[in-house]
Image (tube, rainbow, N blue to C red; front, side, top):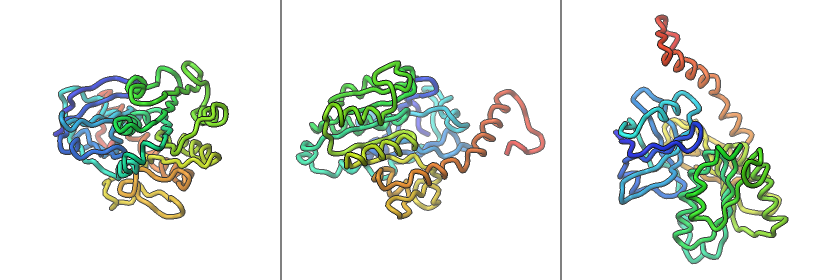
Amino acid sequence: MYPILEKRLLAEGIWLMKIHAPRVAHAAQPGQFVIVRADAHSERIPLTISDFDAAEGSVTIVTQAIGASTRKICSLEQGDALADFAGPLGRPSEFVHTPPEELRRRRYLFVAGGVGTAPIYPQVKWLHERGVRADVIIGAKNSRMLIYTDAIREVADHLYIATDDGSEGFKGMVTGLIEELVEKRGEHYDECVAIGPMIMMKFVALTTRKYGLKTTVSLNALMVDGTGMCGACRVTVGGRTRFTCVDGPEFDGHEVDFDEAMRRQGMYRTQEQRAAAIEAEREAGHTCRIGLDK
């Protein structure tokens, strides 16, 4: 069992949890993920690592309560424990293997959307500790849904915020802010890293392609085992089938077939809606006696 050391509400429906998992914390690197189960009967949920502390033996995850399984995770409290916490999984960010002196000659632009802001943090922090310059754009529907802004402001060279309704920062999409930084302000970057909803990453990649800006995306594909055996997380990158869990989760954003990836994400939407309805009925005290809640 993996005890919850800390639980904190970041925004509506979005929870930060610090988990006691010493072996994962000692091995974790930026860009990797874990697979979590709330209890023995729960679905396996992949979550990108949002921070880690080897000395404390803790790993931080951020979860948005959307479906039945994520709501179950978010319902746990400090002192409770997760049944499974497998990781670190996937390949670490490419820059982890780049010599520090080469990294310090480069300038990064990170673009985060929604809950994707959390896994941006350990990457920017890792670069900051090595003297590498990185600007960050955070996008959200409104100011109430912004997360991690204070933490990222401490490690980024510049933090830019974009909200759909203009309640904070730039009014509009993150792509509009990228265009403003590059075209109007004359900012130059050597690489862009985007993490967020699939549709956001698609349009970030389309935008950066115009500037010949190398772009890395972290794909949040459906997963089951996390070892490349089930094939549920397969995506097409550069015309080849790749497995997000072992070949990724980070890929060249200009080579990802986002339309195919988004179609695959929607394959199990009906089952998820059914699971949510069953969970709601159970919480309301209903007991199915004819097996329809299986």
